Image: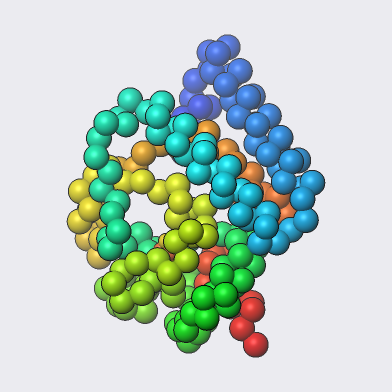
Length: 206
Ligand code: SF4
């Protein structure tokens, strides 16, 4: 969203300024709508449902839509980087983990909860960088209810470039409309809570 806004701000034409105003308007409209619903797992599910529709719309409009996506089941390099989630998504993941009776690595989760983005880079080659929801086959165990950040990430550069150890220039599909909702969901609590997946989940460990 930040990069997308920076690009919009570069366009100082009347149309560009209008587009920027529309983005701010839509962002606030999403926040106002989300605030009408009680916080929790159901609100996260509602965001995911709407987000999936907006992502499909963004992809259909993208001139690069015919390009094959590199993202495939079993490729999980992006499950080794920092993932921002909302508190609603944290509650949804906990509900899901309990429902599925998942045996999560709580020690790894607690360590990751203390990490900043640089720590993910520093530990890129270590198994302790893996998301706790990734199974031994490199599949997400909560795929249906994965956070927005995981749903909206579609790569069009070679999969090997996503390897956090290699760190090449990863090219992703732009999701301008979906990004507005994703950002709004992160800003729905007042004050906004910017939290990571392990940090949010660690709050639930007794
Ligand atoms: S929640 Fe699932 S998709 Fe998201 S980082 Fe974890 S394993 Fe990967």
